[in-house]
Image (cartoon, rainbow, N blue to C red; front, side, top):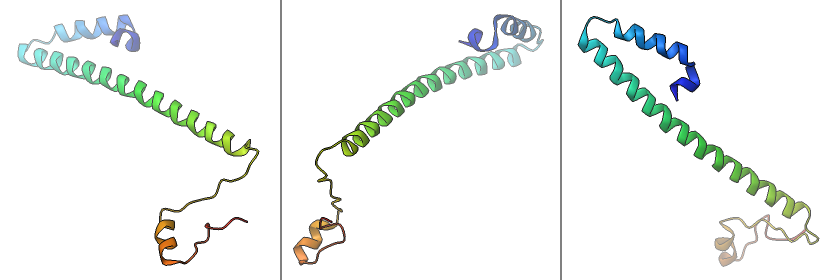
Length: 100
């Protein structure tokens, strides 16, 4: 994955640079951080792919609903507010409860 992003030569030169670090503890620490970053990058890519698919599905659904409403032969799409059930019980009519 890193080779795809950074290019093979840059990664090889980076590993050469790491191998020249004299302190073993620092070198191991850097290598652990690299491994952790690679894992996080793969997880991020997976989540990005999932989010992309969810976005495509949401846009497709929205387009389908727009087409259904705009191309319908009958115009019986009245807004029903969540509070309309309570308003009917009290007997008062809401703004969207009647047809034009």
